[in-house]
Length: 526
Image (cartoon, rainbow, N blue to C red; front, side):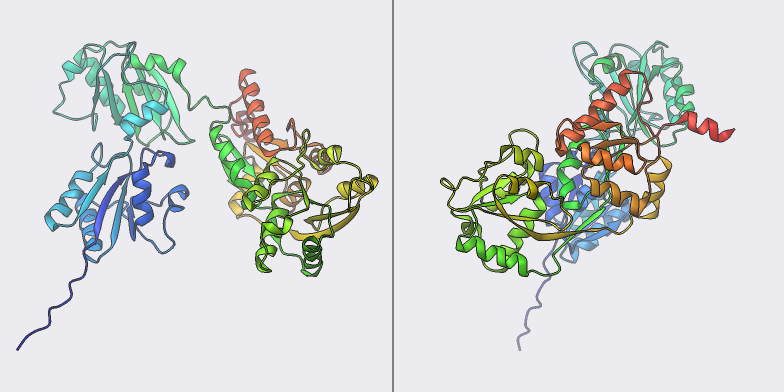
């Protein structure tokens, strides 16, 4: 009698991934690959949005906050034995300053396949973000990394001599112990110390002082979280090499009231300037109530009714493209038709569709700029006199009127509707009204009206930046003080103008962030 062999369940695997000290952009390419392949992600606390976006929709996430290394090890082994591809996400580097090695031991004992992907440790990455080189010709060529300031195995007398840099994670209480030990061992009292909290994040704060005053100054900050301390001559170089905290919008909370699709490039630019952008959709884009006018215009486009088609926004490009796909057409339907785009962003959306526009304004990227470059109708050179203009339902008549003045007939067709979005969460509304945002970027008159309508007026301390004169006029009509206007009506120019405003503000000796308002607090106290 024979027995049928039981089918063995395939064994999963575990990858320990170092996530870096705080900036999600420091995740390695290998770490990103493993996250994208994971069935289960185990992490200490909620994942940043930038990392969540890398996960599959069906991924399981487990929170191990407050769990011991032994318990975390058992958790990942259990998941791997169930056939899961597991990623254990750890802050910094799994094998430096953490308990990754203890967890990996659990996989070794259980004979579960595993991999360790190194990450940027807080002990090395945070000093770099603070502008403190751990080794250099001027700051010394050697560095000592300590896991804790009360490590009994440390040769404190050895650390007290020479130009060696010392790096150690400390609390405000821990830095007092560190200073006492180094001073007792003979390190000079004037030795510089840099303490950096929330390193590599927009909330980064660095305090520089001497070894004999660091305990009192650290206590004076009121911070209870862990900082990375660097002790030694290398700290002197921070004054010249600080690159992260000196970005023009560092730490600014900037409200971006746009649709999600429109905000991505602007948000990324603000982050490069050091800001913390917060997207609040004020406009929702919806299809027209009836598709008949659009379908007639598309049929006319295919049959040769139009000489031109003009796109005034990326939303218009998207609306036409989606309707094309629904009726089985593609970019080849534009053959023989001249294409105009109101600006570079709209032109880029057309190129992604497979269409290169013949006309993009050389100057101002707006309806006025497009009209300035638009040729008048010539009944000898132009075989057709008609323009297809797919736009929003609330678009102004400037372009239509200008084209008609130049002799063109215009089919002004509603390609999409813009409606007011739902109000943002209560905490966002409160922040808008109370001055929790340092700046707000308005990219159109409708964003001004809709933000005020769904969330109220920004606090007087908030810096108001607008994309152009029409948006400025709308803001001022609603009682807002406009501080910044872009040099040209384009989102990149708007972000650049806000960054320049912040730089000039800093040079003038004003508070780095408008939301820091000691005078307002003092008045309230009276």
